[in-house]
Image (cartoon, rainbow, N blue to C red):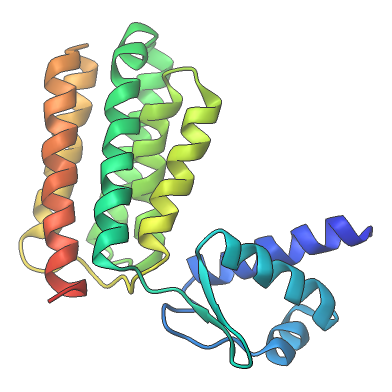
Length: 213
C-alpha cells in the first residue's frame, strides 16, 4: 500500500473511532496506543492526526499532543447556521426533482432513525439522522452540496458527547422528521422549509441545554 493510501486509511479509521465513540471529546490521544490498535507505525498515525487537527476535529498543543476537540458555543452557532443554509437552499431543487423512488428512500431513512430512537441507540442515531437530512440535500442533484452538508453535520456531532434522547425529545424528533417528510411528499417547498427550520431550531436548543449549561 502506498504511503498516501495508508495515511488515508488510518485517517478514516481514526475518524470512524470518533463516530463509534471509541474516542470522545476531550480525550487525549496516545500515538503508540493508536498505532498498536491499528497495526501501523507511528508515522501514518501522526499524519492522520495532523489532518484531523487541521480540519478542527482535534486540538494540538506542542509538547502535549492531540486531544479530541470539544465544541464551543461560538462554533456551534456558526455550524448550525451553515447547516440550515445548506439544507434550506436545497429544498426547491429537491422538490422539483422529486420522484417516487427518491421518496421511498427518504421514507426508509425516516423509519431507520425511528427504530434507532425506539431502541435507545446513542452514537449510531446521529448517523441515521445525518442520512435522513443529507439525503434531502442530495436529492437536489448537487453531490458537492450533500458532501459539504455531511462534513458540517459531523463537525457539530463529533465534537460533543451524545447521549440518549431525553424527556419528550424522543417523541418530538420522529414527529418533526415526519412533518418534513409529509411536506416533501406533498411537494410543498414552503412547508418543508418551515418544518426544517423549526426542527433545526428545536434540536439546537435541546443540544445546547446539556452541552453548554
